[in-house]
Image (cartoon, rainbow, N blue to C red; front, side, top):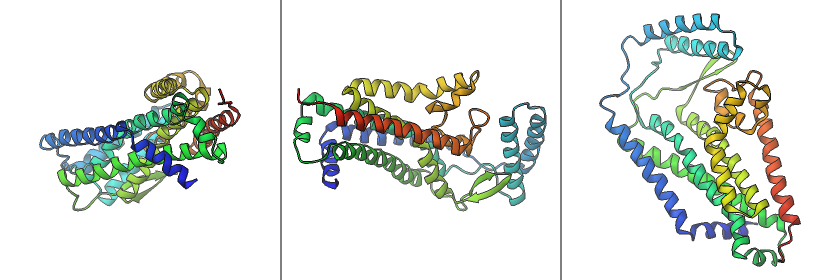
Length: 316
């Protein structure tokens, strides 16, 4: 199994396109960092001397909105913001701080979508290309179980996804440290759970944030892998997966405005950060519910991939 994964990994890095993807990710990250650096003097994130009074006034406004709101989701959101603001005031933690390496690393997480795009391209071609080039026969004549062959390809895709996210995190950290520096007293991230606010180390929070923000990418990569395996068509896998990558959540949000069953759609559940930094798309949605839905879709995608690959006749 390990040798199969090594073989697939070498195939990926023998393609010039792989290095182009890595270079693009680095170049775009650098461009964003330089843009933020150019704006540093005009928007340096300096702490307002009257920030405590500002938060008190904000809490008064939020309390009024919470009393008028008819939505439980909105009321929970206002309650969360009020609790966090009160914690900041009590423990003297300003809402803003000078732009630094960790702020940039979090802002750079938006490029996880770009890393996902590149990984989808790899996932879409890793099986379909074997059929189009005719090399699938050379794989299957080996005394190796078909399931191991396909599993090695899928594991390689996941490793590539992790590799791209790792490049983004490490490079943005290094670049952010060079351009923006480390804060003298890094602010903790404030978690809110069941009415209780707790502090979390910012670096640990960033690891969690990147992990949860990558779930949507992993699901779409798995979908692209499934389409590539079932239909043996990399163009279809890339086209459909990229279309859903950029529009799936928006369409689901529109459906959620009128239909409660929208919560069962994949894209209503891929953003687990909605339970940490935002509000659920629909009332009644919880993190355990979304995790169960993700596991269901994940199982369906993999079942279709392995079942069709095992049954398919490739003699012709």
